[in-house]
Amino acid sequence: FVTDAIYDIAAGKSGLEIDLAVTNAGGIRSSLKKGVVSYGNIMMMVPFPNNIVVLEMDGALLQKCLDDIASTGGQCQSRQLAFDIVDKKAANVTINGKVIDPKKMYRVATISFVYEGKDNLVSFTNAKLVYKSENVMKYDILDYVKSLDECGKMLVTDTHFRFSK
Image 1 (tube, rainbow, N blue to C red):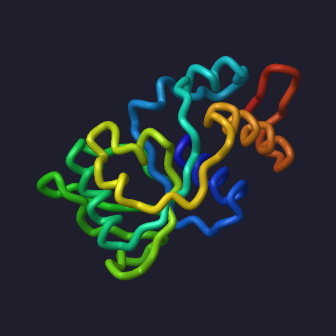
Image 2: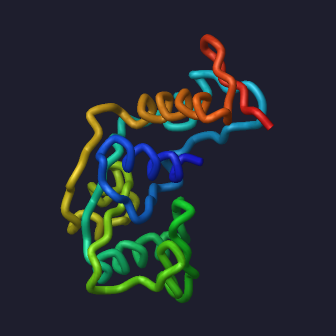
């Protein structure tokens, strides 16, 4: 949910076409359960003062970034990205069903923590920053969750959200 939300938020707020999203698993401190979800649940889920960012990089650098992710045993990724971990490297990488192209430019949504190379994701520091949200991520996610109600996916009442079927 969080990484797909980062993808959707980055695309909507930046106005850029985003290819995929990743984030570190350690930044997600709790999950959302079916039923009533409070603002507090969102704040506990993503408590850190990170910002959503969009990075631009070629496929060769993206492969190195994904190798960093694979070397940690894996992190969180959006629905557009798939790969296997073989010998602590990202193998069989596909983006939207297409094999990664080392020469193609990709836009990756993530968080400032990852862009700063933390959690041993150092290759991300070599990417070009093309967008940074002015909000702390938890507030962007709160707005995103509220917007889901307009799509008929949630019922929002006062300080609680209720996931629909």
